[in-house]
Amino acid sequence: MLDAPPTEPHWRSWLYVALWSLVIFCTIPFARAVIKTVDERIGLEVFLHTTVLLALVGGAVAFANLRKRQLPPTAYLWLFAVSAAFIAYAYYLRDIPEEAVHVAEYGFLGFLVYRALVHRIHDYSIYFVAILIVGIIGMMDEYIQWVVPSRVFDLRDIRTNFVAGALAQVAIAKGLRPTMVASRPSPTSLRRVCRLLALTLVVFTLSFVNTPERVGWYATRIPFLSFLLDSKSTMIDYGYRYHDPEIGIFQSRFSREQLEQLDRQRGVEVSLILDRYIGGEGYDAFQNIYSVPRDAYVHEAGVHLFRRNRYLERARAEEEDRPDHSTVALRENQILEKYFATTMQHSKHRWAPEIHTYVDDHAIEDEEYTSFVSWDLVTRFGETEALFAFAAAIVALLLLGAYLGRGPRLSVRSSKVDRP
Image 1 (tube, rainbow, N blue to C red):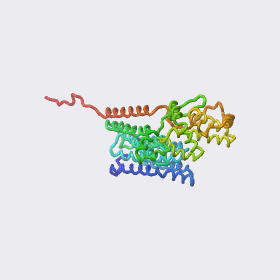
Image 2: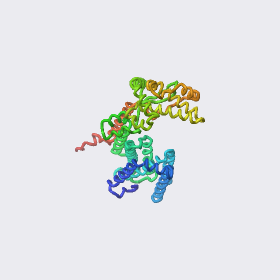
Image 3: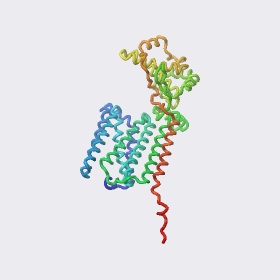
Image 4: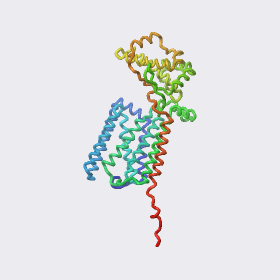
């Protein structure tokens, strides 16, 4: 695959890609159980250590290959740098050690994709095509995780998958230096890259339109997708960022006008729901019934209330951190009383004067508060802007591919037959 094509047939190389991808996908439903078992018996650090070990083994195999092929010292430097980059990126994920496994999984997938492509692509575009194919498979991995209960969709994992695939291609291109790949991309190859990049953006765009509101729409109309209404994982959710001078910073799925209208129309109803579940039947039951796809407004009010109550309990129990906890409780209560006013007026969770006094006495007045409720909302741009940007990029890539793929044109003179 470096100086000659792989010995197996073309289809079998792609079969290896498909099988490894299937292995990755099939581990998704069982990953949480495995992680829990490993955490209890060994510790999650084993995932990080395993990834580092695999990077070292892969680097050792690559160095052995270099010695056989007598490549210049710079090839060794590149392989060392890529191996170090693999290890460094795995260490970067140390706070969630199990995520480091993605680096090994998709690094190896990048190697397999290259082997499959090199049967027919012998110019430098092969590396870009391989990265994009790995990225698309990585996005499908995250989409499957979003569907599977107890798993979540995470854009950071998509980034990790792309990075791992890219590092694998750098190792091949600059370290192993295959002699089979030694020419500039042809017009056909450039067109292929542009089209594949456009396809990658199409797949990526799906995550930017799959909002909880849209999930609720199709999950209520398609019976076998109704389980998505219970999902606590969101691909994307748009909203508004508030900077209230009296409270601080918080985010909401609703504009100020929408919050006021919903509070007038549903305030009493929501107060009864919160009285029943928050501190009653339980917060877990509340989240299961009032998920974001089912009722984003009730969900948002409930999370603010739960956060307020939890930090009030902590303020009473933990003397050392009482000022910080009291500040959180105070600010969350201010958000509720100002933006969910009708709900709080009719709720048994409305604070009595003595609680107000207690919290006011211990809270830090001058500290700017930032609420973490709905903090994963995208507020810098909306869905329309995102769709327009993606659509423009996709169209531009398709047009660029059509232009670059035309190839050289014959001149009129050269196309004429010389006559005596």
